[in-house]
Image (cartoon, rainbow, N blue to C red; front, top):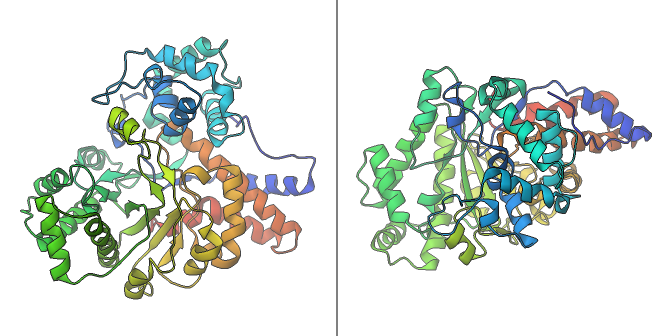
Length: 469
């Protein structure tokens, strides 16, 4: 691995020198990646290669796409066509040229930092992309990617990844993970059970997703009880392939416990296509509690991502597909909404419930106090828009003094681009070091405790939080 281009440390400042010392103490610790969106198929065969630079850095990264769109570029010139969600006729080198010509719009953003550091750390490229060097950079990256040294297998080892968990549809195929198990990667690359399409009965094509679940589990699903049984069978499939966690997203944190007669009625209306928006909310709120019950019973860590208004632009979503509809943060209330779940399972030490939010105003007001009281609750790291230098520092300041280190779970990179993983972990570790250095200089932590907690934030809390010991 090469050195990052942007280090964030001002070594003329004593506090920054302490931060640099704390960072050096964890530089060689492996990376724990318990929540990613990396394609497991990349690792099935040692002959697989990563895609071209435009796909790797531009079209597969919705952070990048939405910023370019905001500045007037079209989806077509960035490689996406309306209808069918197929790639446009734009050539990768042409897409890359547009990206580099406008790269300055990422100044001061985490995307810009990640990309510059990914280019530096993975490819040894120190130049900032621009209109003049775009063609040469494309050639340099493409040449590297075609070599064995830059195969996903080789990079996995060079990145020093301890374990990487993917995100997999509950009703989808798990063939890549089955092949990885045969190839000896089962403990290093693990699936994660994601049931969004099955729990939210209002999603487009819910009955099709249910039919897919029935097919993969060989379970006939005609009522609520058979639906629950199919979910439990599928979770067992995931666990047999090394899964340690489930994942669920929702716009609100609403939970409730419904009588079986009521939930059966909603389920039948969903099957008939007559469920109301109120039915959708009550069913998903009930199912969050049911998934918590399943996690308490089977041991899968439960991740709950809350606060994303999906596909804010329905026109863009309909034309260009998932992850391109401009998902937006919304306000989230936790204390009342989570109470039904916590009344049932908050004191159950078998449950590990990791909460993520796109409403960071709730960190100090609700989330940190909840995690600082209920044994089942842990806090995930800053997510999405707040996976940034300022977002990380606000997180540390808002959360730690109430929740404490040990009720958090370190970092996960949530990466879609495999080559961005080292840069994302590097940023987290540097911001953690800067925050810890302040505590050391203020006398709140000894230097020895600073080093110990630095290792926790970089590595140990992630392993413990996701039961990857």
